Image (tube, rainbow, N blue to C red; front, side, top):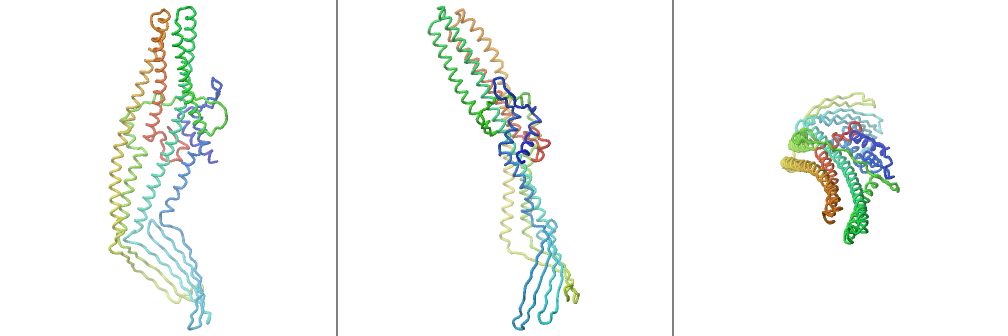
Length: 473
């Protein structure tokens, strides 16, 4: 059941940006595994995301663990008292109820006591109720309310951290798929290059038979074919490693072949740095968490300052002494007063207050440094993204020109206008340009995923439970 919930949450996020394409048979007989399908399967099989979500379950108990208990406390006491000098015995029974209202600081206690003398069988009983209210330290529950706010902030920060962990996990899955796709495209490019060079070798051999080409030309192309085959072996090894990681993520142990589907995500995603950075500073989880950390440190200073005050409690009550278990009154009393407890010179409390102020100042300094580092990181990342966009454009132009040059040089070689070395150089340049374009395209996708992750927009929600219904990239 938990795995089903995890899969539902993941898919609610993924499906917003990706069309759900069921895994289908590929052109080469392998099973096409789309990015959407891969993330869904990983969320079902991999326990990593479930481990992230389970942390959310414990957060609902944080206030119960850290705030003073507001339970209704029942205490029952029964004892047998023997007065040795008078040979008197009396069983005594006491029942009390107490209730603390933490956010107001009010404590109410009601107590009933009864006893029976063994010699006379006289029954005595009494009933009392006392209300106590602090007016200095924790005045009217102030310290408890501060603690309530502190714990609330800590819980919210923990939820932000859970989302961050979720984003990191999701980004890792996407990056892993991109690496697999890149390896797949590199193998395809290398296979095409190998086949083209084999054709060129066959052509040179035919030319040798007609005494148009020299044996050295055949050897050069033969060496070229071997180099292409060697490169193909290396790229297939890289692809096999990437595929192993994909299968590990989805916990697949079968022998079925998988092939990736071209991820169409982020091809046209433009970034307005000024606008997106402004939104990041105004509404991102990261900035909210930093603000909450500062607020938390200030609240801790206030709470430590409250602890410097003396403990002064106003109390009032009413008691009834009587006979019989039903407390037939013989004496009634109403009372009120004040109690004071003030440790001097409050050495521990003073030290806690001073260290709280130091921690607050340190948090403020750290926050300012974090703001600067975030701006620098995002600025550098934006520059890298724009660089990759430009390099992709240049790669397209270079491939087009290189293809034209190879065609011309092939024709020129057939007429003896250029050497074989010139043709081989141009063929290799064309192949290098194709590999470079694949690299730049995948790198651009990775950089944009990283941009979304750092700006808290890979998953836009602030709470894990929101992902189920509204998760977006």
